[in-house]
Image 1 (cartoon, one colour):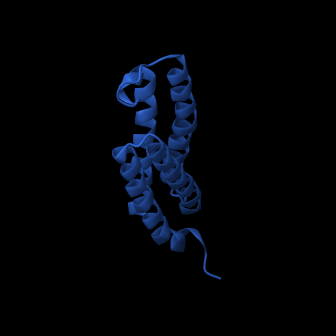
Image 2 (cartoon, rainbow, N blue to C red):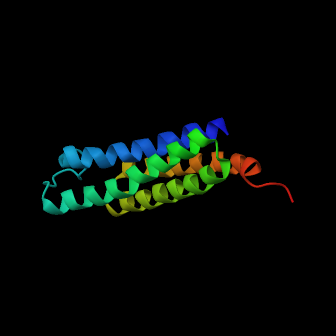
Image 3 (cartoon, rainbow, N blue to C red):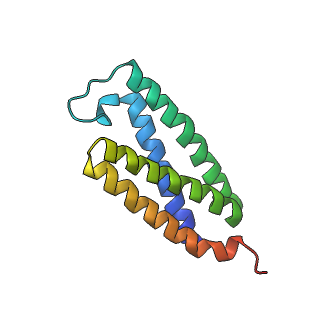
Length: 122
C-alpha cells in the first residue's frame, strides 16, 4: 500500500507540475522552436483541469487509506501517462515518450501489488 501511495502521489503531482509549468511558462513545455500562443495556453488550462483535481482526489484517497479508491485513481493516472507517451510519439520526442512509459509501467506495477488490498478475497 505504501509503494502505491508514493508512486501514485508522485505521478499525479509531477503531472500537475507540468500543467502548472505550462500555465506559468508555456515555452518550457513546448517543442523546440515552437512559440507560445493562445492555443498553448488553452491546452495548458485543459491539462491543469484534468491533473490538479486528480492529484487532489489521489491525496484524499491516500489520507483516508482507501486502497480501492487508490486502485481506480492510480489506474486512471497510469492510463493518462500512456496517453502522454502517445503525445511524445507524435512530437517525435524520445524523452516525452520514454518518461511517461516508464512512469506508467511503475504505476501499473504498484497497482498490481495493491489489488490484493483493494479487492476482498472471494
